[in-house]
Amino acid sequence: MCARHAKSAKLGKLGAPVAGLALDVGCAVGGASFELSRRFRRVVGADDSKACVAAASLMKHRGRLRYAARAEGDIAEKLEAIVPAHVDRERVDFRVVADVSALPPSFRGGGGAAGRAWTHGLHDAVLVANALCRMSDPLAFLSQCARLVKPCGVLVLASPYDWSEARTPREKWLGGRAGTETGTRADGGGGVRSFDALRDVLTSEDGGFDLVCASDVPFLVREHARKYAWGVSHATVWRRRE
Image 1: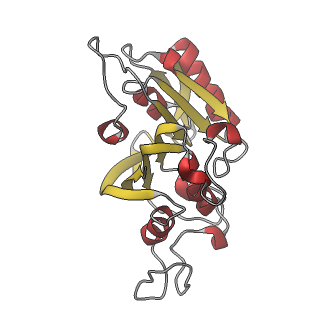
Image 2: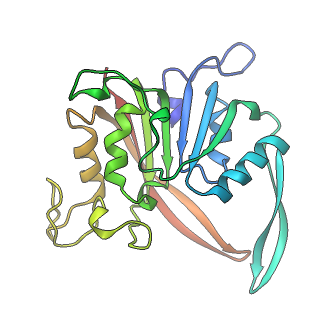
């Protein structure tokens, strides 16, 4: 989705990306970051887990990493993750951040008149894959996105809206709180749906984005060798206004 909608995601005659800076927020161990490097000249993966960033950095330098996965019960099996040979790992860098919902200033663009500081961004594409509902303050993150994305660049959000107080304080949920009026579009039960809340934030004047498209994207999470959890993320693409 980032490559399809980002105008900078073009390949040269030899099949290598010619331009573009992409940011993978909540990159985990870097799988999506390496994929982004196939269409963007430079990619930065950011995560607040030191262990994940350490594993991603090892993948960058070695191209592979052995790990143990649960097979059944307390039995583990040795597996190996390998970065495809056609991926240029040198185009990818990984950074540990204290909180992905409040990225440091080095990730954001500068400039703009007072009250409209969003007029300058830094990245051609920002991917947030299944990380929004794991943030400590998702609204704070959405409010800074216009400073992360260049004018005409894209923000790609994918989330199952799986809110949990273990990850996000309940009062910080974008939606999913029955009987509350935290947004402008309430459902029949008086609650606000997450997509409606994030749309109100991103399409506001200060939000600075227009919705391009939305779709459902299924995913699998392995529990052990014979059991997987199936989920569906709501994937939305937003274009930064000029």
